[in-house]
Image (tube, rainbow, N blue to C red; front, side, top):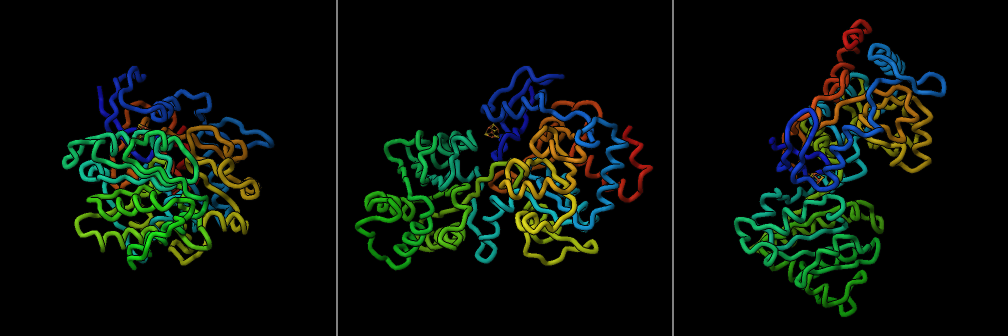
Length: 439
Ligand code: SF4
């Protein structure tokens, strides 16, 4: 038996047990999403051979020809776009940033349109964060704001709510769950009698945040008619819990990422957390961004560490230059002539107008599984599944680096993202003769 880390989501559960062997006979501790991740190994969508487009069709080929075509497309491109990287290891992300630098590309990760926004919102003010261990050991209030934990990060509440911590030995009995969401998601179903379920009006989170900030700062009255669809009693209970508890962990999800009324609700929530912390002398509130992909946050850390900017990096003459673009604006303006997509499916995820523009130019896809992007790609380079067939490091949602363990061999002639990106870098340096070594 061996302990491994699940890469099914950004919780990166490192308490999963497997029975070792050529195949996995037993998997203990993983949720259905984690089991599904393991099922990818033998999925019929698995890509096992490099492929290149010949006419209308993708044809299987050898690594030599696939890398030659990759090199040809990269060398021809004046404005390459590199995108994805939230489902690969940090080690591979570093190689991808090196590649972007070498080919004067623009590189962005999925976090630019997701939880990377939390880092952006916190740039001027900083951010009070907690580790999950702290949440388990100390939190008495857990808030899910615009975040359906039960379905997107299935074991999160098992770990932080239905658990005992060093200073919370009575466990669930002492912990209060507050869910704030316009939609009655599955997370509302785990509510106990002391918990607070808040069905807020759509796109009115910012009104609630502002009202709470105002009441905290100016000691003003709670409005009789409530705010944003929340009645006075619930507002009062919410306020009491936020200002009189010892340790409050606020998990924010997709629901707070969009601007509301022309303002950024995340930025204002970060300010509210500061206000709570300055007034509540016996307690502390912190904010945790709950991204979905298991290493989305890793890209931000790798980019910050190597280039001083967390995403949307534009290189020119092998140097980072200032730019205000992101993946969306680049595609919208058609400011690219090649895409290198790694471990994601922009054709399926982006609005149709954008995916149409993306598909109109050559795409090199690096991934382990077929997706909508696969079907419009010009070159497809298969990879091992990180966290199963290759190891490395990933950043958990609380910004803690977690080792990923390889426990199965990848299919024959299938390499890790890190090895593959390294191969492309070496091939770019040394030219065509390098490609032959993988055949
Ligand atoms: S919660 Fe996430 S990391 Fe944990 S077992 Fe489920 S899918 Fe894997």
